[in-house]
Length: 312
Image (cartoon, rainbow, N blue to C red; front, side, top):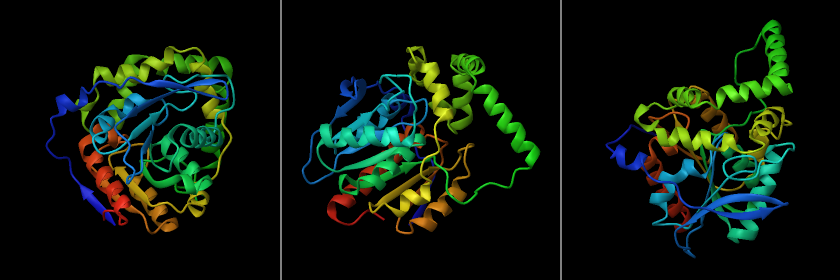
């Protein structure tokens, strides 16, 4: 089922000013991993595990944790290389974050979870759900990243392809990569980028800008920035969906300038026709831009899972 939802009346000043939650640390493969835990465990309901996108952190879920903790045991985690987690010099990939999340679920949470991931976090969620079906009770994707096997964009001319390849090689060389990182980590550039990917500009607050900027000061942040763009290509989304058995909910911020949400939705539907979906009047990060709408949709859907019939 697919539904359209327009932006509703919200107390935006209050919800966008929600403070970040104080987290804890877990040691994984010798690295400190930051996570947040809130809410009480409910034996009849699966816990939620929230996974941020590229450049974000557990802070990006603060508005969701604040509301969802009333009904669920809620966890949020900083992927290795992001947020307050360690930023070692190594190869970063979907497989690495899959292993991190699998171990976290099994050793810290201890029972099957509903994974909710935005952008890169959505792709990481799919990797976990495909690899560990017994530990995943459901998957919620919010403007999820990840390529399909089939080309979803118009053909690119050989000249443009060559130029793009040359630019990528140049920018990912050590010095150009470092200079690019110094440029994009500026508050003015972060605000400019957020303004492009948020429909509601009131959601682009000083607090949000600082939450995105702060991890860039950590040792190793520049190397992570370069490594992620050099990371090996992982499994395609359709390959992961073929191995997945969990219920799937797609929440699309339809104003996302970085992806054609209707086209991507059609691709997901082709390979996973049993999914549920909603289109929201938001951009690339609907959970942060229209949190109350997202929270209600997540709450109803997960409660439906617990009752044996996902809310349609």
